[in-house]
Length: 86
Ligand SMILES: [Zn+2]
Image 1: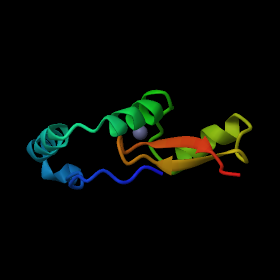
Image 2 (image 1 turned 135 degrees about the vertical axis):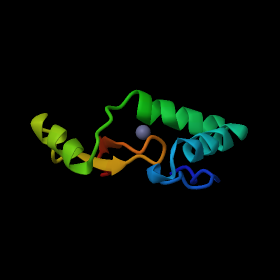
Image 3 (image 1 turned 120 degrees about the horizontal axis):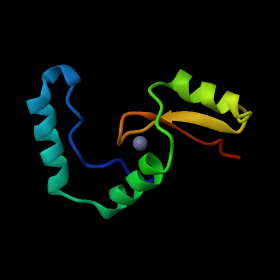
Image 4 (image 1 turned 180 degrees about the vertical axis):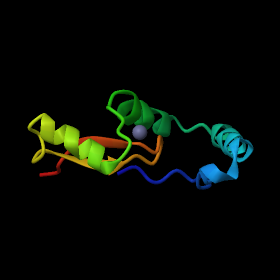
């Protein structure tokens, strides 16, 4: 597992768009190619789901309920499916 990004936690949505924008600017100040690669691998290529139930339902529909498990993405905040570790 890659280490967690050394960044401040994303502000609560209730904090408003200004706080969110400030957070994004803060994130961009220290570009980390490994995080970019991670994001493109997980967020760009994988389906994004709004919740764990949503992700799990899609796995079940595809007959992959035993193979895939859902996890909350620390980059985009959505849920993705990944293969269950053996
Ligand atoms: Zn993601």
